[in-house]
Image (cartoon, rainbow, N blue to C red):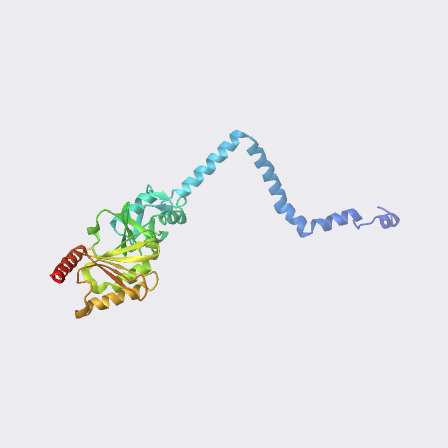
Length: 295
């Protein structure tokens, strides 16, 4: 047995460095490194080794691609058809042609915002929303532009809405007999004023043929019998209302007479131009009066 002297010399306490190492092992950072850091580094080293091998990279990429396709092609993620609400048959056909999707298509490959941006480029569409409904349905809700007038140009006829936006060309005027006709450069930009003039001309009924924008400054009201009302640059609606008031007064029906033009461009100085038949008749009467005076 060791002597009491030798036992006194043995120090059971750890050394300073051993004590510090034990304290280090008990710190949260060290424990986190053992639990997370070491496995991460090992995984990173193995992954780097695998990626460095071209054949291994190809196998991994193929496996990832197959896994992705197996998920994306699942029935619950497939879009099978497109439903369109708010548009007529022609607009629906235009939408289907523009989108041009081969159903069924995976919802992972279909971006509704991109479809919406593409549809907004169609002239007949004012607003549209696109979403994927449950059941694999691509829902398209359309707010179409409503035509309010026909714009006559050198290239043909065009439907326009209340914002002056072009909707679609028209082959025949008779296809939209209820719509008024406007013409002239820049006419669609002033469609609001044109609609006010057309509303004011309602008492004229079927006599109204349309409006012509001249010099991008003012309007002419075109009637049947080749009659025109030349409106001023400012206060056009009020000037037209004065003429219509005279026309609806039995004793002052100026438009029912042999008049070709009523010029209201100068405020307070309206002028009237007779048509060719009235001019000839006036010249004949004048010549007769001259002969009577000479006799």
